Length: 240
Length: 199
Image 1 (spheres, chains in turn green, blue):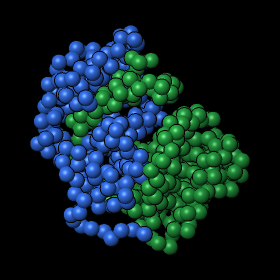
Image 2: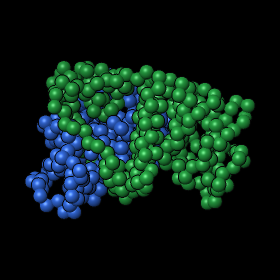
Image 3: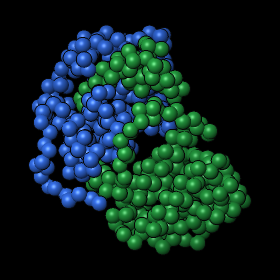
Image 4: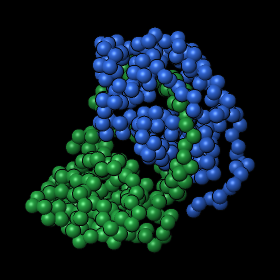
């Protein structure tokens, strides 16, 4: 166990080994001390690759901390032991959901500062997404978007809901808009709605009716009744 | 409930420059947004640079950096100076977030794997932060890296800068698992002694 300190500090352990090592470390002050020392080395390695971040980062962080509550200090030392939460649906899905939630929060941060009267809607959306993530049959998948970036789809059959978030997806071309669709297995599509030019807020889709897929097309501004172009993204609804 | 925003953080200025970040972080735990500006100024570059190094994709790196920095704000009260420097606390969070993102994506394309070995040798690039102090530290790191065996250096850098598991590193280097594990540990330990940190 003790020889794993280096790999642990480099985050080179898989999830199970990481958890096992952390358990061991809680009983092994010597390991904890070594980890503390080696982490200072890792910090030097990190600082050595520092890059000036884009200004957009500062703006985004500032906007978010303004609406983010700080954790209180830990007063009971027993609660300092890291809990090893076990995911029911696999670490990948669990991670994807954490990422989805982070994106939701990011989306909220942006929007809250933009428009005070959206807060209620956003609160409702956050609650909806939290409930979706807590559903026992929640599933997630990530698919590539044509033209770059990816979409993360989280859905639950029992709730008949899905949430879609996008990462690194380019703006819709001028005069065009992204439109989201639910598609049945026989190819019928119904519109879920239009999306902003840069799809960086999560979309919550409610009232799923057993559709097999969710898809996104580029449509003329104002949207279309039916998809008129090849979808840039199609994902199977895992819970369907 | 917010404190009046101060443009110039005159009061409670941290004493020593060396633990500036530690002191500012304590101020952040009291809810001071202006103190967070100082934390940001010191650590955003390393956080973003590290995320960029591991994830490659600038958009994803920015997302991860944003998550990490908000986490620092949120968890500031949980920082315990007895368990290491503020810098290592923040960068531990950053590294883990970036690596977890890589694993979640599990898009280890062939191209990335091919680039990995070259990256391991390239280390650290020149296009980095401008602080003189940082430059000296970087030079020292490069010198200390030169004192490692090839296997130590490649094990440490492939894991740390590329986000590989030690099993993946062993595969890439064609070395036994146990050896790679040990090299990561003694490689880092040798760097610690050479850099004179952590003791």
